[in-house]
Length: 304
Image (cartoon, rainbow, N blue to C red):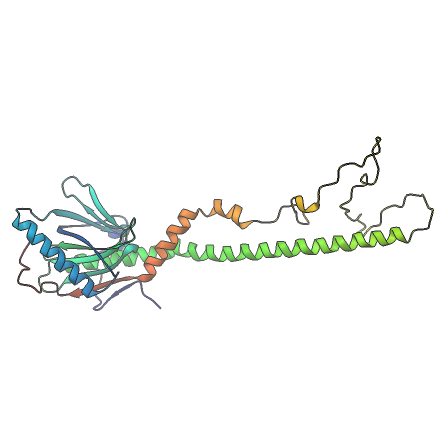
């Protein structure tokens, strides 16, 4: 069984489920920035990204620029990165888009996570300096992911599977409707042929109108030919032909139109919501990997 959440060394959760589902856990950190990466997971991937952003931050520091401070709000709805003073949301990373999270085991400050951007679909690596609580933040993101995944399975995840089953049933219903229509046409053709044979075997010269034959249910068989189609009009011309049956709307034995899953399904299951659920299901199935690693490998890595 695939687990949505994995970590090399299992540790107990630090917060109650209610704190992450009904509220959020705030943390203060310095934001070193984000950079595009090629893969959604991997220690070497984030290590290169951290080294790159640290180098860029040292250059800005030498130019007199300070590392910006941010507030992180972690909940089952994602990781928000806000301005600590104005509370303006700078980035909103949904949990099902976060695939990898790691913290530095040497100085307990640096942590990072990889998130798939919602607009460009590129993988971005976010790097933070968290004042010696990197592991706690990493575990909090892992707990929020685990709770969000369970909540998804209890609600939307089951809906995805149910809708797939409904789509299969709708397809089968449509196939049965087609078979039903074909069988009705065959029965009608046989009844028409039987009526023609009865007309040919009637006594010659008889002008007495013959009552229409009935089927086994004592019903008059349907004929696509109108009773007035063979009667000329007063000016001697034939009436316009009756439209073919194929041009009419086909109906079943109860007079209802055949079921169309494409016309009624769209209103019941909006495509945008279905697409969103599929995306969330794919993200949660990929899972979140938490990992402790070493980022400070260079003498350059002094306090930012």
